[in-house]
Length: 289
Length: 268
Image (cartoon, rainbow over all chains, first blue to last red):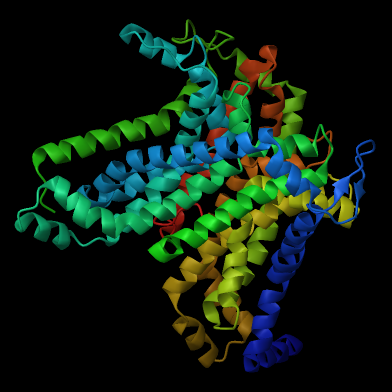
């Protein structure tokens, strides 16, 4: 007890030491182990694999990056992935905004709490299960066929459309929550003032609400964009034969056993995200995360 | 705010439709786990409990469940310790590099899962020479679970302030006694909420797990993925999916009731 007490008193007198002890374990784990692993991965991107044994040979070259840029297959897949990410982001923003607006501005405080839980809870339900559920729904005799058949339409089947629908579904809550938080901070009086000065709702939306909540929308888009760029499972489940960047990485780790090339391809989503973050920095979106 | 009746009705409709779309696929999985038709044609022709009974004897699914529980519990314990330490350091102290440290904590969940997955896979196998197994998956899960505990504890610490701890110390309690009798009891529900969320996150994770779990082992999500394209397994897959929905949403619901301060935050 006395030993414990004197240790405690000593720690109390030396706040820097206390801070050091508190930070030590998390920093060893994340700073050393995790960052170290990331750094090692990007170094591997400059090496190459022996084409027979798959063993990594540690001589430096830019060959992997050259293949990535010059081979039209990878170019197509990169642009396809970016297009899917952009499409998913736009769709989610359009669906999320009215939902978030009702939650933040019209619902009573009690209803608001319940609505936030209603949006948040499915976010945690298994990603895989949700993609799988869409696979069942999109199938030829699934629920979408049953609903759309009477009005002369049909399920899009498995392919790029199905991938965009499923990914938009998966990331929708990630878009709703930042927009909801942004709208909550928007004072009602500004909207009312705009109306008092004679603006119609559409004009108020365009000139007042949208500019003030734009950073929140961008914050949501960071999630939808980043999550789509790294995805490979959804496209496997509902995408038919289409491939995204994630699939190339996955196949190079597994079947092709070419870790250096997988590392090279994995830098693409990271670089795109860094460019995207740099581009949106000035909107103030990063404070809305 | 003054809004016309039409605007309100349109917005309400959008919200209701949106919520239906969000919840429908989840409820469909629950319902389909009772669907007697093995191809899950819609509408179901008959309902049955057979698939649920069959899961109870499916050794692959049961093994996967046990692996998931082990990984989830171990990762949660590590995340609770590291996340709480980091939360105290960042909330109670101002120091050089504080922003970098908080960025580092969210990094494992902000980067695409596949990047984290292959980075850790590469580090374990080629740098450290460790064979992949349950242990490596636990390390990986703990890495991205830290942020969840961290967020919950930071939010609670911010709300509490430091007055009560100072009062306790002024009254002569040592740092350890203060933690045991004052700080910890006030943090308990935040830790429970963070722990539940961390467990739910680990229980569902698939991408990082794919790259860090040893061959021959399966967590429940990986079991689903491996059996998804085998037609005779579909009914059982549906039941496992239903179990995953229940196991991951119930703790989250509880965590949100418990903590009260996570309600406005996102997944981060």
